[in-house]
Amino acid sequence: MARIALITGASRGIGRAIALKLAQDGFSIWANYATGKEAAESLCREIVDLGGAAIPVGFSVRDSKSVRESLEPLIEKHGPPHVIVSNAGITKDGLLAMMSDEEWSSVIETNLTGFFNVTRVCIREMLRKRAGRVIAISSLSGEAGNAGQVNYAASKAGLIGACKALAKEVAKRNITVNVVAPGFIETDMVKELPKDELVKQVPLLRFGKPEEVAAAVSFLASDAAGYITGNVLSVNGVMYM
Ligand code: NAP
Image 1 (cartoon, rainbow, N blue to C red):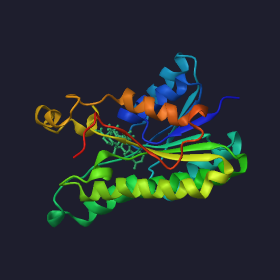
Image 2 (image 1 turned 180 degrees about the vertical axis):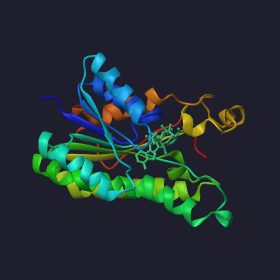
Image 3 (image 1 turned 45 degrees about the horizontal axis):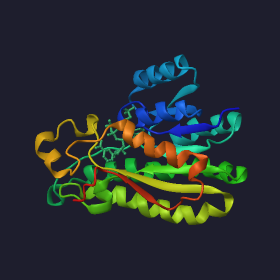
């Protein structure tokens, strides 16, 4: 039976590319979405048409009850995922002095608490199976900080700390935990940004593609990466802010 990969925020952008790549790698995909039901359904049809297996799974990663109610029955029926990719994320940029409670808490709850909610539901059965991969999508902003993104950088740096700690907790059960930290990647998330200006700050002189992040995730999810854990793999065109 194919091993399962759960990808949060798989309806668009980087998550969609990760789902397609892991499906090509032979994983059966649980494609989570929050609002993009049709997009997730269409992704799953595309994977099935290519000869793979995929199901859409709707929940907001912020809502721990909904995460549990969606994932527990799937885990009971199929077993836990072999790979969890915590990719769902949002930005609400603005200077700290002007930041609202909602701008702070919604970003932390989605990007960081979302990781906690999803991983907690899956990890116990993964520990029982003594196998698995936990991969979180952080950001260059979490590694280096970025003005106007105190909320986002805090959430993404939090993911790095959480993954380093979890890597130590679960290592003896043969589960690896790693982070992929993209720079500017061509998705909806950056479409409002002044690309012509920003691209000059990237030594490779271009934004990355979702598929280039997916390639890093695919490697970390593979058996070949079994001795790599507690690491951050940057995918940023050698950009350091
Ligand atoms: P995107 O195109 O805006 O897509 C965001 C995805 O997250 C969507 O699939 C969305 O689902 C999902 N999502 C948002 N809130 C959610 C929630 N509460 N529960 C479940 N899913 C939720 O963004 P992207 O660029 O692909 O970003 C993917 C990840 O990479 C994010 O964590 C982001 O921070 C990180 N990242 C991106 C860049 C970049 O330059 N693009 C750089 C560094 C890091 P629905 O559409 O179904 O609502």
